[in-house]
Image: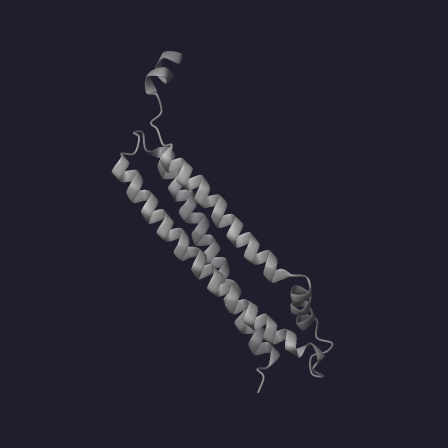
Length: 145
């Protein structure tokens, strides 16, 4: 037996909220990392850089996998909603049409590419920032005044 449309939409909404929370966590962590690199007045030691890189890469992989799993769940729910498009109960339902348009418009491919691209770019920025971290030259700043 198929779930009713309102139950599927409720689950889709809950999954979308979880995806939004995952993105918020992703952004917050990156702002904290970059802020920490900028804020620290001394260069990171090699051991600190190694620890930071290992921890960050672990975070990034776990975050991406968590986001991907939530996107997969949402995709399954949307596909289940899509099945109802020709059902007499829902043929003229505008909410159902919203989800049908998502599938027909390639939403899944776009969301997957955005997640992968954002994680790849963020990883590149953080890794380069950690590797090239240097203390600001305070002597040059003081002599300029």
